[in-house]
Image (cartoon, rainbow, N blue to C red; front, side):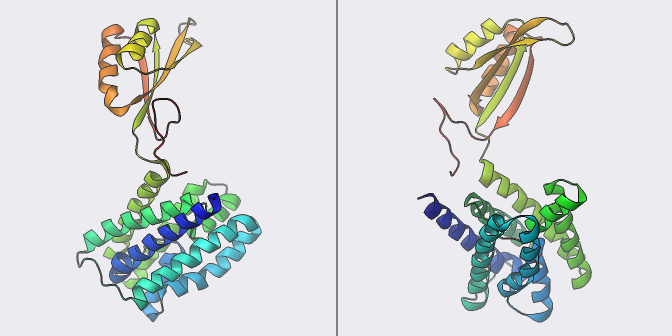
Length: 282
């Protein structure tokens, strides 16, 4: 059942990625980074299909990944890469979908958002489209940097190179917009919107604050024993998760009960338990 669900997610994500390339990125020659960016540069000069070039250029990348990242990861990424490449050429070369807009700014915005949605769904299906994530892993492993930094270096070099190769200062600027938006949207798809807030409260009047959380907000929480490092004094810390719309009421009440309270507020993207409903794809 889970394998079928993952396969459907990968298929849906690849369709969306194919539409992003065919309707927004390829017509305007916006390079999004990674191996697909190299394929678009090759398409710019040769006219060869972007999807076919992605498959060809990914061969050495996957062989490198096979030696460093393991067979299981590479095979799962191979499926996503091939399917997404097929849909890119299907929409762009076979069906010949027209560009959705002649405005380059709109194309970079909507192309980046759509690409992020598609890639995020593919990732939710436990796969990837290959390219810069594998290169980033190799850089991370041998250069001693983080995975995110390794991917960022790869994409930055490819997008920057597109400007020199295409002799256009604007091309990489739009490419950076696509990269930024797609990265942010991928995070949203994977993590979800911040519907809830994790609140950590340190106060000398935790009983009153806890009473308000229980009866005023109809929420629960956890009280932990604590010790102030500065005062070397025992106390309690309250941990609670509330809905975003309740945050203003909680802040006001904490200020009223204990103006000296120390409060930390964090975004929480998924909460499992009574009173909360998970909104992420599992």
